Length: 335
Image (cartoon, rainbow, N blue to C red; front, side, top):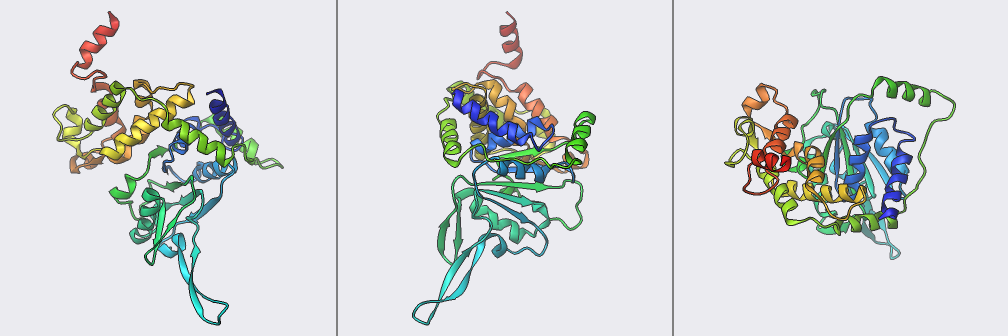
């Protein structure tokens, strides 16, 4: 356990040599990496989303590829294509040339700038970890993680990701502006003669061992039940959901959201030195694991309802113990 925590701390410190502040964002990205999950980073331009991914890749002994998504990008530019090659017999054969998706860490920069046809090229890779070209199946290297960035403000020339693809992301992480102190430190560290960079501090074998250890973390039945009730609480058709969800939500999280919630809780427990996940671990990762799996209806969109506030209400109202209201549980705890 100490070795696992030391390994994570080495990577965290190495990333913070380049990334100033953003502790929560870095921690969530590492949790997703431990769970072999993909990450959608959302924030305005110029706050370090791409630099964060590059810092993560620099601190790991893994292959890295960056794909700049543009309106004219084609699926073959991501997956690869078959090319005609002359063989030793004087004839010609088709040979598959791998695209940039065949890397351990793939940065999909400004993913919402590409057309839906190109965005969908990542669907199979993100879910099955394979690429099918001309009926032939090609397995991607392991571990494999897609880290995508998008700007939520600029809508001209962009294509919103479809719900099926958004649901394939393990976390949706909101990247905020740095504070005044962090901004001063960023200016000083990047305007000097030496530009900070990361060096590999974690091997592929060590990362695979960490990912295996996450799956061995125990999730008690009551914790799994609480996670299930949280997910069901995001669905407007459930009787036990909140008034806000019934009024403003069109669809809620599904089984994939529940799986992400429990796996993230396992990684959260491991990162704090525990071999069993608790209710507090589920609550700590609920927002990034579920916020992108909830769709607002017309009323919610027109009134600008915050999904995070709706989720906070669901977390507050969902009972930890099945069949016992939250108010009675609070009184029991006080006694």
